[in-house]
Amino acid sequence: MDHDEARALAYRCHRATDSLHSLLYFAPEAEERFTAAGLRPGRMGYFASRSAPMGAVGPGVVAATFYNFNPEVIARHIPRAWSLAKPEQVLAARADAVDVVMRRLLGEAVSSPELAEAAELARAATEGCTAEGRPLYAGNAELDWPAEPHAVLWHAITLLREFRGDGHIAALVANGLGGLPALVTHVATGKSFRPVFAKSLRGWSDEQWAGAVARLQAEGILEGEALTDRGVELRARIEDQTNAAAVGPWLVLGAERSARLAELCRELSRTAIAAGAYPPDLFAAPRV
Image (tube, rainbow, N blue to C red; front, side):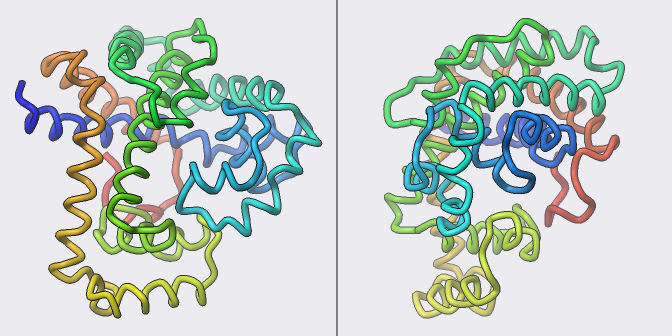
């Protein structure tokens, strides 16, 4: 497998696996566990649970590593969350939520040989991850591995996701695209959230969004809210650099086993989506 093939495989495997990580953030059971641990309802559970592997970090660290969320919204919840629940309590609540949510959404598949195979392959892929320059990955990599196959699968996919995500932020920084412009241009590709959901989920106002659009138009990256040729080239370059930085796990796993993991995760994702893992019309394109 040459490097071009590895980059393409890195993208395909990300698309196939990411739905199985992100389903936690839309599940009511997650908020129930986070509030039981002491957090307030709403966004606090997301910000605290995703950043907790790094410890009781401040709002600046969360904004830097989450990148395209409104820092003003993050600051309403972090560091207050750590006065309500310690990071280890949040992580325990997260683990409980993962178990309950995956059992509900996957049904009988949660104990299937296919899921166990996917867990084994995903865990093997993580052996190709390295921590240098990847804070969200590094924090999660220091956590103990769970025992149950479905929990192993979620943890492995989380490691792969944050490993890729940290590299993606590096590519965005290198190309001079800040958090909100990165979100706006990603939405403009048609491969992300619909605009109304992107604004709501990431905490940006209509005015802030419109301001970013205007600046990107002035820079020749957008025409209206569509990407110009320059914008298409920019996003393609960023994705190529992201894929190039994400090949490690897939080079370790190899083409055949990577393709098998993608196949297994696509089927598991379809099962979860059919069970209502995501709100309708959340994404501009099919998730898997």
